[in-house]
Image 1 (cartoon, rainbow, N blue to C red):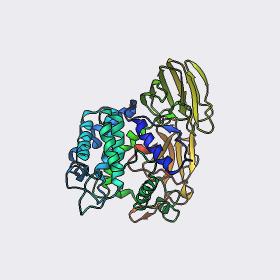
Image 2 (cartoon, helix red, strand yellow):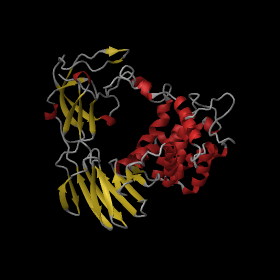
Image 3 (cartoon, rainbow, N blue to C red):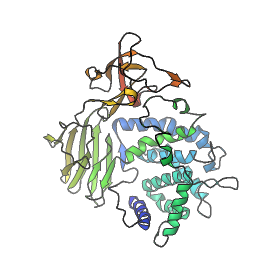
Image 4 (spheres, one colour):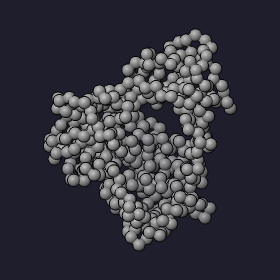
Length: 436
């Protein structure tokens, strides 16, 4: 199924310009890569928690206009497509019966009620025909077709009724018109992301947008959107390098890969790691034929980082243009261990504040003290770190914290110890820390 959609995309692009080159990497069908270790725990939490329950009680999904219901939060009719886009990969990565039943019911209704002209989703004289939510639905359909071959023919036929792009030759004008309409009906991000509208160096803290996220009544789009992050990450963690046919572990973390490369070589890879909380990754690669296996080495990894292949240790020496470390794997099974050496990094941020990193982790403080400039002396190498801080004057604007005050700051009281934790493990935090 991967080849169907890759061919469609490349054919469409080729109709616009013969000078476009193929992508550097090819993805694999949804379900080829599955989370393991802590990632599997997180996936299971999502499936058994809020993400997996939205179709049962959250009215924007359970009573969606896309399945004959009456509830939407905007004229976009986007809630259920957002949900579908994220739940499909999670359902098949976990092979979760409940989630697969949910997405199958949504799929059946959407395709069974497709309009004669190919339009998908709610329709009527009082509804504008907006393109954006259809893109979300198409994303979900593409993943479903990859994950479940029994539905591929049906899904592809429905997608082509929506927009016939199977044979772009001779339809260049129609394709360009479609692309132009899609562009002109949306907002231009080029106009939005400018220094006067969206300044550079926006602080990684609970800023003025803090109180508009979460469950209703403000931004329900966040609720239906959040489940897609991890499943999309896992689905793209392994890719195939187009030029060499190498298998690449691009997005590091615990996972299991079992798939067939373009060459027909059947390969399986297991990754035992606590990354990003730990920096050691242990691979078992099994391949029917000799294979080039590559691992992305993060830019923060120190020169003392090593790899051990079948007991032989050497320094990592990744390609300078791709950051990929190459390994030659023989037929059968090969064990590879990668140890990424890391250190504390202090990054300058707005108004003289700093961000504290340890390898891939960004640290945060769970309240608002100033951080000592010699913080590196106090930070440990675990997932938690210590620092010396004090209370400072920090202004409030519109009932929210203002930008970090200009550093260095004067302490308003005695110094004390604080604990820094990974940014994503906090609820209310400060990631850009004023100094004293």
